[in-house]
Image (cartoon, rainbow, N blue to C red; front, side):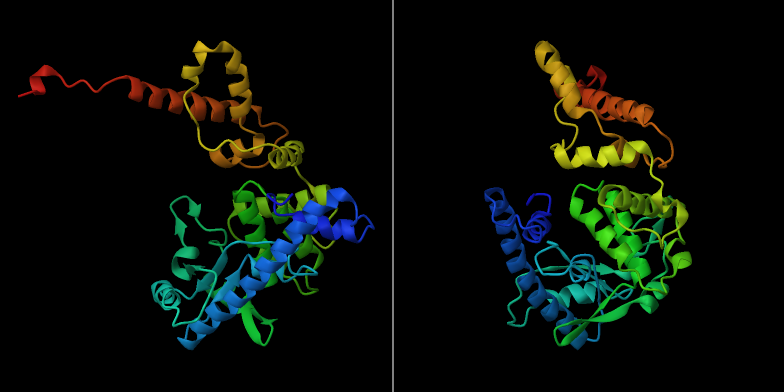
Length: 331
């Protein structure tokens, strides 16, 4: 549970169900304590980093991480590693320089500074960032200040926060259950004046990912989506099962060695084929497909043949075949 980032939430659930004293709960309790300690260090870092930028006339927006974790009942229930700050267009380099010079102030964390001019940039194939389809001016106008002790920190407005969280989780294939927990929490804490027309505006692919993420939170966690658009409850059958499998199985990083090398040991071929077979969500994301349809079989076959067949074979042949230069080119 700790490696999935939900050890603290598991401990919270066990504690409030009267099962906090069972032996199997000890690992969840240790995960919660470690995450709570780390959360305290993160809070100190955010205070230092935000204050330092403001002293230089730069107003950052804290995204992801703490901006979501603050909504949970207690510190440590939602662990995070990175501190992400978005600064106004053109100020990214200056902000990096300011934060690299600690000025004698101890800060245990380094912030990832995102310049709004590139963070919201679009490429020839559409928006590149998780929130690139919402203009920076609108994002900045809708942002709000929230309390962090005596300091007030700027975070995204609820519409941008929900869209960013959903698209980010989808882009990474929901490799951690905590991202889906975030969606459930955000949905159930929507303000009464939440602007769905603005939240759903932008790149249709991102909007579809947002709606399907809401559906996942509803079907897997029981999140209340009555205030969401009617289509929020709709998810393709393969999506939820794919997400569950990703949480329960180790990931295969990269294509790995060529399958051609396994033909000398036929007993291992079947194992390697099963280990490398892409799940439906993985193939959908890699091929840039839409989320409609009841089956991803064709996408999985194409993805597997290209990734583990053609590409691996090319690398294998390049390693085995020496480069031969025609004699006429040798002087």
